[in-house]
Image (cartoon, rainbow over all chains, first blue to last red; front, side, top):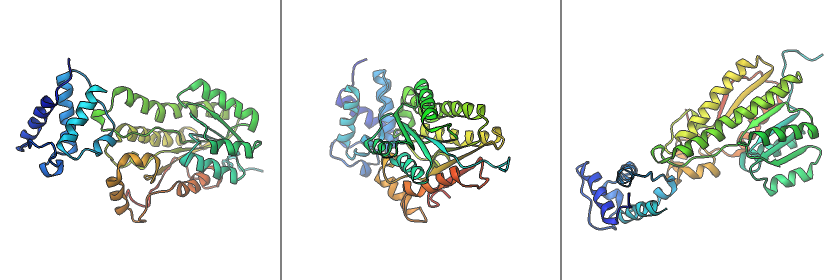
Length: 83
Length: 248
């Protein structure tokens, strides 16, 4: 299965937040702490992406700790897909 | 006449993962204590090489991957030929982990278990067989971790291996019937090396919750390892936590 586009990843991120009654801002510079997107939410997003692409996206935690903004999440998932 | 129930101090100690950090500190301390030391690691560092060059009759080092069973056995035989029969082993070699369980591949989990649990058990078995065949008594010190007793994110497989070694330590003490004293030291998080996996926020939190106000340093673990190898204490089958009471 092919990689997801940045927009498709963003849609999935929106679904993760919607399931918690939250809204994903359109601005990539939005702060994750302010919008309530936590590390386990990132895990859920990564697992949803895995489902879509049919492959595992395993990664170590240090990269995860650098993620602070919505754009960082999208960048990280994009990089994982192409790794 | 020696007491038949007494396990004498170790004279020749094998240290796995002895090239840096706690392993290197243990090697250095044992040399200073007059013990003959054999140390191996995947890569022999300049520091370890320097010790071997400085103390050629007391130290033997080599590049061995603990997962390479045959190489480990060959190294043990080399050590016996050069320094004499091994009557002490410090299982220190280990790989760390820094990944949530759901994002850790099955291969990575298998590697952590192989390196941190299976390999030291296999190496210990080999050394014990040779020790017992010679009628020797001896001592085992397993370096485990506070992770075996308390939960930390990102360390699921690692913690499982350390808990496994703690459990093995107790069963070894029973099984070896006092001929071999088997104990473990369980350090808290060091400020360096594997603690880097926790991230500064988690480390700061651990320091705040530690009554002694600081993370464990290798120099604080070394005397306990020395005691377990060299002193007459009757400590057997124990896991000694060295974490400034962070875990209580």
